[in-house]
Image (cartoon, rainbow, N blue to C red; front, side):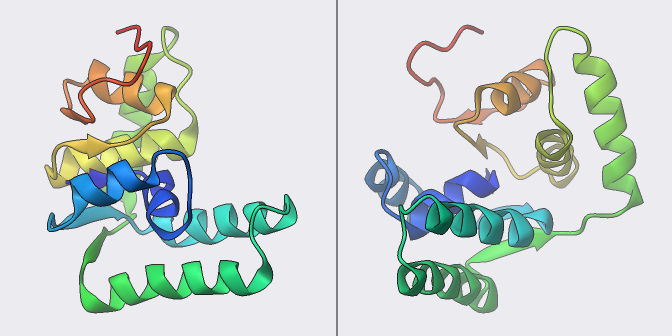
Length: 147
């Protein structure tokens, strides 16, 4: 299973759907892009700035994510020229129907190249891009999906 970085944030902090993802992803080998390191750290810092996390809680969440990387519970796929070429192709394929942001397109391209399906994500644009490339999604549907 491939996870967008936001899924890891849900697993190391408390969000409305954290329990669902923790229950459903437990025991599955999880993959993501090397990009996840920076994205997870940035998301945790953003939560701290917004007053949603105390500094010590942010550090604990980051340490938990790091421990999963060290233990091999999360496997990071390389961010290389092959991924960037596929990213460009992915954006071009989705344009102009889907406004796929660059970092989201990197995740879609990495998942596609790694063949680590399904792609776990809640971001609607990322999911739309993956759907356009026939990449299986988890969960199958979000409330009000408009595919």
